[in-house]
Image 1 (cartoon, rainbow, N blue to C red):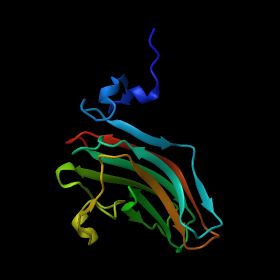
Image 2: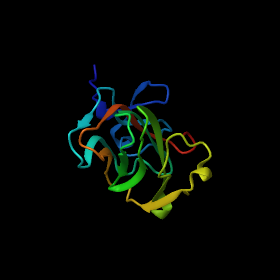
Image 3: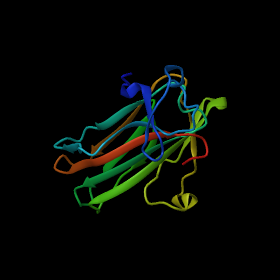
Image 4: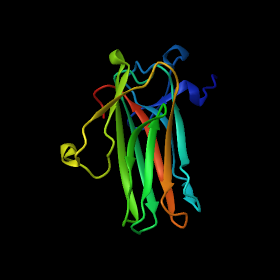
Length: 181
């Protein structure tokens, strides 16, 4: 019997856990999604106005290629006019930011595309609730992020008022192969 640990497996788009050989673990050559991280345990921030990291994962070097990273966030916030600014960073670069106010809950989906030939990633800074991306007043943005090496992926929040709260109720992050997002 062979024992397989989590580092030797990838999860398919349908949630199946598939064992892979170590040589393939460094790059997504099988056309399957790769789960980076996630939780439904919640991460509550209150009592501070400092930017606070709520969740994070590592994107393995060489894994993104010309695929995409999809991050889904479910947040609950104090329902008032004060801003609660959420930021998603990849390799230290802000790839999404949004500030829910006068609402109690929001779901955001962030998609970052890889452009390996140019050493760039492409993203939209204002993701939640916008179907007509051009109607948001913002264009798709590119940034130089060296995806050939491991890069941190983080979710943070900054509250305008220390009496407010923000709860990352759940989140999930995955790498999808090119053409599957």
